[in-house]
Length: 136
Image 1 (cartoon, rainbow, N blue to C red):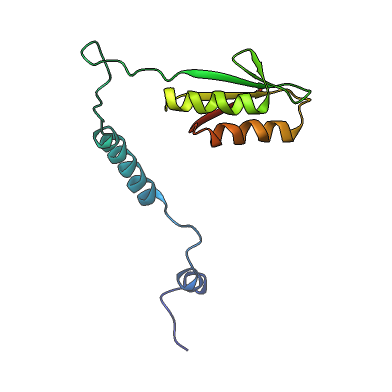
Image 2 (cartoon, rainbow, N blue to C red):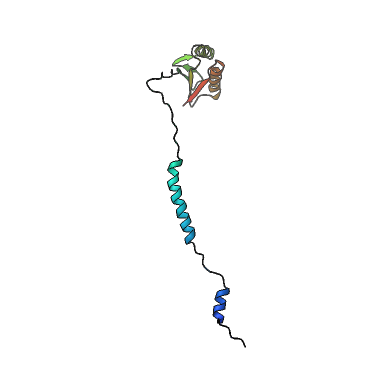
């Protein structure tokens, strides 16, 4: 009978798997990467130089704003003057010729018919107004 230098309990511990993983090197690497990114992050941020208008540059001319109201009965008012559909179209044509950059602000009543709102919008577009905004 042969006698082994190792006992049976020693052999079973050598042949078994390691039950725990050493994560200390992983934590060390992650901390080093964190420090590197913290140092490098401020260097990466860039700046964008812009020239803002100041006293030396002329201010842009403001485009005239005109308010077009559509009331609950389907009537139109341009800057407070009540107009028919034909008169509205004539006024918008003249406005587009006088000031091509004019802004028409359409304010429709909540009770206004959608057709009246669509008429106001199409009249402004047909008159040559390119800048139209909406308001409640």
